[in-house]
Length: 350
Image (cartoon, rainbow, N blue to C red; front, side, top):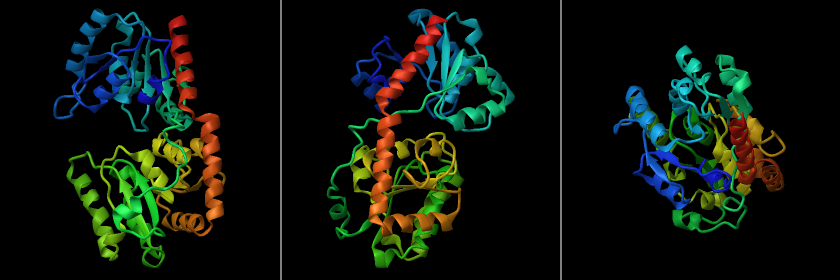
């Protein structure tokens, strides 16, 4: 939403979110007023009853012409009071997850919903969300921020030869992102002879023990193979456009993906993609045309795809250039902003 808001000028927008933090700072940089509001307690837990009590006075004070919930959890909350407020309500479906009957009923009270992919829309419709209120609007990507560029100095920073092969992975460290496949794939590639290195970017946010164990197992997997020096964990980074230009290939083994932003970023950056054919991924890239896709947890096929890209540079370049063209044709952030503007305008007309 941040990238889209830069290109929406037909509405006077205010953002209702916690006033402290990097998100609020980035919103303010767009000259958008930030109104303090949160549906979470300081320790990160949802607070539905209190959140509603705090939302109602804000509606009376600011009297918006339309209220948009920018997440599934906020959409569920907004839906629970949509019938008692006299303004249009819209919400975003950005997740693929099972919902209770009450949650589905709450979503159905919202005037209209935006799904980030057809896969996301289909999933929720199958759960009982009314198909009549769901519109698919793909996320967009900034083609200037993410574009093909010459490689920089990352290999030098890592103490690697210029010929070293860097396989990138970007995403929150969690089971659904499939990080446990990194070591399984590395075990079947000749990493030492070919100087192949894995570069996962991202952090673990969950404090559950199973998540902590999953995180630790990433390092342990490479250590057990004697390949610890071929794993470079970057943690949280804000220079993703730079990193995308450094990677020889993006490996994205997610088990669930509504519409992977990292795939948009890699495709726009000219980085060849090997990813799971899950969720909305095939709406972004086409197998064997703009990426190579494989079934979830299919290590053998993933390895074959990676080897094909790394052994045939012309094929990899073809995948990358076709993916970039697809971003230019269908996924520009300006296009997403225009579609969202039209969507909101239609709600105000009704």
